[in-house]
Length: 270
Image 1: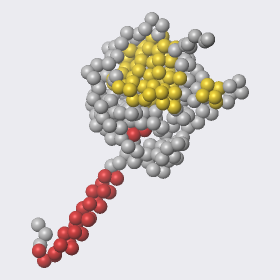
Image 2: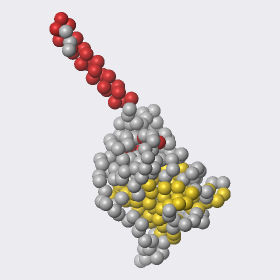
Image 3: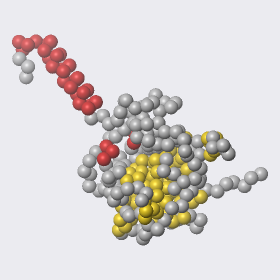
Image 4: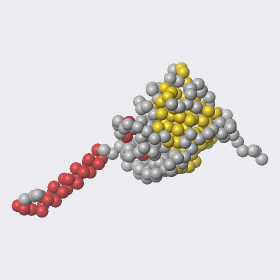
């Protein structure tokens, strides 16, 4: 209790100090940056701490988990071996157990390259939460080694919006947060349209991606502005119309299973 002799001014001062302290405390725990480049066409910096956080949507109990691959799909991982994958220094060396593979160090990528595709992949972050923000189940589906769809434990885990699960990393947060809890299996169903170039190598069409996370559309034919990067705005310099699928290891033991991909092909021409 404040003694009466100090009067209302002291009460106001203490209240003001408390409010400021609360504000600073909130800012101190805000995840993100304000000293990074602006994302072209937006008011937001890369990994902007003030960017609106996608609302949370509880996904249905199950969607495409352990979905059988269509007859024309390439099975990239069936739970038995890593024969379709390589590491950056040779053969892929991730561990395999109980039908899933788990990252143990270094990225792995498919030996085969793809153009326009439909990709199905299932993943689970560690059940035991030992960190926060980008330290919780950090990985990624890195298309052509250039365009990352973020993998992260985003269940009750504040981070910068363009770095949460399902984000086009450093560019576009997902429309909503459809994450399941730590250790639970989650699904991405990704449709990707590769960038196109003329005979001289000039970009004629940017890449586009549609992503369904646990049965919820989180990107709908979204343009990718260039290679995804940490604290930077990427470009299409050195990009191609075909490339591998890469799984990005970031010191977190994320699990993957049931990975298959389909080349989209083309419509009949008139």
